[in-house]
Image 1 (tube, rainbow, N blue to C red):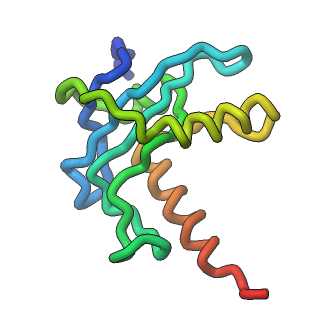
Image 2 (cartoon, rainbow, N blue to C red):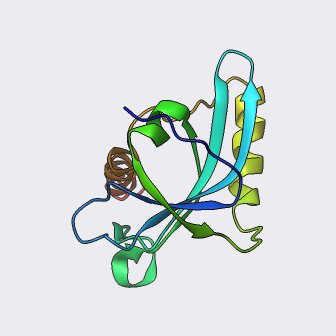
Image 3 (spheres, one colour):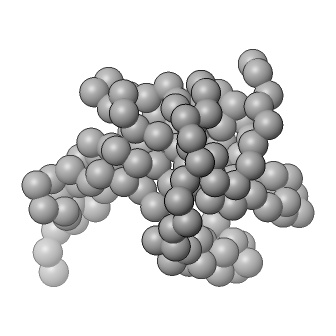
Length: 132
């Protein structure tokens, strides 16, 4: 497996799910954390993520997902540009950071396409909760 050189702001093509060929991974921040090593905070764009909670039933992006190097190395194909400055991902990052400090959060070590499948499963299961 190739180990790429990563930098904040890079846009990468990756091994997408079917029908999401235009989806991209954007590296928003890179940090080293005790016990985890490098953590890459990424946004994923141009998705067709099934989500019953959004209008039309498809979520087009995930502003913040924390992943490890192995997850990126297993996913990305080539650099596709540099992203414009964006702060939309910061809210998710801030929530994750507080949860991490409290011992309630980690990072994904799965390829990005598998992470998306996992997120869809969790969102779908959340919709099946009985009303009180």
